[in-house]
Amino acid sequence: MMAPLVALTAYYNPFGAQRRRHNYHVFRRNLDVPLVTVEWAPDGRFELASGDADVLIQVKGGDLLWQKERLLNRGLAAIRAQSLARDVALIDADAVFAQPGWAERVTAQLDVCPLVQTFSRVDYLPPLSPSVRDIAQLMAVAPERSLPSIASALAQGRPLFDTKSELVQAMAPTVIQVSGIPGMSIALRLEALPGFELYECNIVGGGDQVLVSAAMGRLDEHFHHRSLAPGHQADIRTWARRCLRTLPGVGLADNRLLHLWHGKLAGRQYGMRHSILQSRDYDPRRDLDRSGDALRFAAGTEGLKAAVGEYLVSRGDA
Image (cartoon, rainbow, N blue to C red; front, top):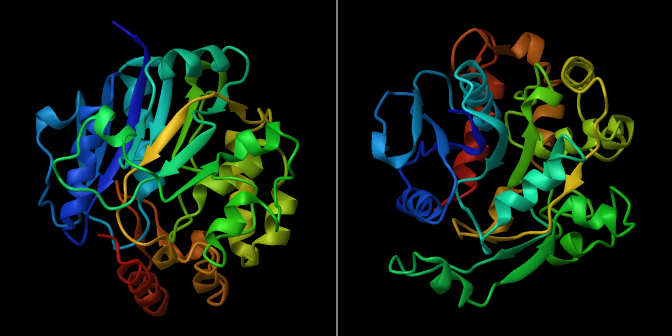
C-alpha cells in the first residue's frame, strides 16, 4: 500500500566516524514515518543492516566526493518505481524533528506547493553524551545557536541573499551570504514534479542552495553570489530546465528541527569550498563519469580529484 509520506536520507561515512554512525541511529530512533535510506560505501563495507531502515539501498563504487544528491536520486527512483509514497521528505541523517505532527504539517503545505522546506527553524545542538538519544533529552539541551530556514526567512520578507542575515552573523565567514538554512530537509509531491531529480554534480556540497535558487527562477542571482565556472553553470541550467520547468517556488512547513553535532561548522568552509571547483574550471560534463550508481571522476582529473578529497578530509567531521 502506498504511504502518504516517507522519509528519504543518504548515509555515507567514508572516514568511519563514530559520531556520524551514532547520529544516524538517533535520527532513526526518533523518526515516526517510514524511512528509505541509501547508504554509500565505495569499498562495499557497509555499516547499516536491514533493520536500520524500512527500505535500505546500498551502493558501492565511486570516488571520494560529495555523493549525497546522487544517493538521494537513487532513493527517489526506487520510491517512484515501487510506488512507496505520494510525498517524500528528504532529511539529513543528523536532523530530528522536535514536535509530533510534523509530517501532517508538511503534507498540508504540499497540497499548496509541490516543493516545501519542512522546517522554519533549526537548533544546533552541542556535542552530546551517547546516552542522549530521545526527543525529551534532546529538547532539554540548550542549543549553541538557532537559525531560520531559508523558506522562513523569505516568508518574512527577507531577500534570498543577505549579508546581514541571522545566518551570516552567526556563522560568517563559513557560509555564503544567504538569508537562512537552505538544506537539511525539503519535501516534494512526486506526481506534481514528474521526472524531478536533485542536482547531483556539486561535488563539494551546496546542492541545496542550487535547488532553492532554481525552484524560484533565480539562478542568475545565485551565480552572481557564487562564482562557478561556465561549464558548471551551464550544467546547472540544463538540469533546471529538465527538472524544474514549472518553477514551483519553495513552500514552508512550520516545524522545528534539532541538528545533531558532528564537527565544527567552520571546518565545512561553506563560503569558500566552491573555489576548489571554480579555480579548476570545473565542468561536470567533462570531469565526471555519471554512468555508475555512484559518481566517479573522469580520466585526466587527478588534480581535481586530489583537491576535492583534501577538502572532504579537512572538514573534520566527527
